Length: 340
Ligand code: PHE
Image (cartoon, rainbow, N blue to C red; front, side, top):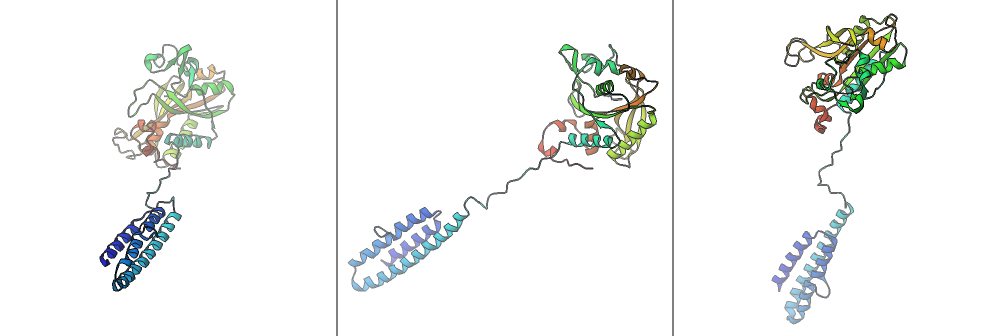
């Protein structure tokens, strides 16, 4: 009898400790201490068949067990109560990461370019991405038959003689047609060329076009403006270099390079060991372009420039593959913060 009691007690304590819910605990209480068919109740009931001496000793032992079990039940019940009070909060779950959005690096750099020029009195304007041949070529002094024109030479033509603009220069024409000098604008936007999609080319990319036309605008104004831009954009320790170039819509034309931001001009693989990085094309607006929009080239002069925004961003952030900009990989995109 005593052994049976000890076994029952151990079984019950184990079961109580393992009970995971109040419902489960109540079931156990009925099974062990229930008045009708509880296991301990059965033991107490069977006392009547024992002799007096046994009755006393087993009865005492059974009462001790009953008290112990009652205690264990109420302790476990209190535990489960506090746990369920915290229901819904599982402290063992790993935390949930919150992502903070950030601007696309090309947006950051475009904003910065526009900021620098508006700080110098330029106004931001936009033009359409679908253009006519007049705005994209003719008005810019690129005649029919010029190698820059035809489909073979890298343009996306649309029905009706339209095309996706191959540069932002048509915005120059649109603004000059509408306004009288002084005109001082910066026009960022997307352009399209039938280029391969590789580490340094994309069929769609961004440019920013600048234009300043007034009386007495000189090449010195062009150089001064773009030098200020370069230092604001890339740091005051860089040097600039203008070298002769050719564009049908500017005369003279030039290319602007900055001293390599990686090697400081000594020569490395990024600058092809020249020490210089080309960043934009520029020049004095061609007299024929001024005539095409009804400006008198004897009275007005101006300068224009066009830069590739991806190229500026790649130099600034040291990015080696243009395709990163368009891959929408959050691991890449989340690295950029406004750095000015
Ligand atoms: N439109 C030229 C290009 O896409 C850049 C440029 C703009 C050059 C304005 C001179 C003046 O390459």
